[in-house]
Image (cartoon, rainbow, N blue to C red):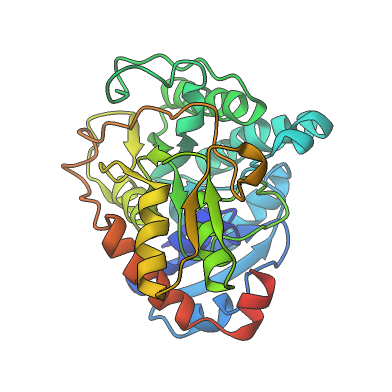
Length: 329
């Protein structure tokens, strides 16, 4: 049977599809439009697994039923979401809520009808909102989210709804609160407004543009292949001990450290710190979220990428991309 991935053409979705196919698995990819990034379909076609694509809206439950009727799935990774910036949040709050919450309910209902074994719901560390700043690592069992932006609010509502349906419908559902992800296939998809600092810095420096930050920018950055690996591990686990898991790298490093290492690798003076926000080229948040504890995750998945490993892999990956990718990136 297949694994159904919603939001398959998106950043995390592409990484999940890639790893499933690389493992020789059958993948049912669902997205609103046939909007794969440049190079993706050609690359995926060379992998040993089998890929079928369906254009479907996660708000269209009948379309989801048709997909699962034609290609039965043993598992679902529901990665479809709108990740808004402030402008879209103010303009399209209704659509964001419908896609992120109602879309999740409709995916769950279709999965239930068609006997899907497990649904993995990629939630987000943004659910912590105002509660994201304790003087220690955030813990899934100890820290109660207080989301304070539409994305975090809708992701938390969808997460809790999914887990409520787990109880009411007897479904096997696992929620994964994903941390600050970056890496391969990341781009402006049209519904992803908040691009990562490492991606923005890398793109600028490879174009010969200087990067200026106001401060170091510490974060528990997590490389996208590790996100995909953890989500697949949660899908495959025989009997997870918890219903909510953090997905992060378990390492804490700064965006400035990434920029320094990349500048050294490029042999160019392309990075500096400047406390004047008017001169900054990448905006950092007002506060730095506490890192996510991944003690629950470690028995199921060991993250592979720290700063140095991710930088080497990312540069190698970017070096194999076509001019079409770089033009769109």
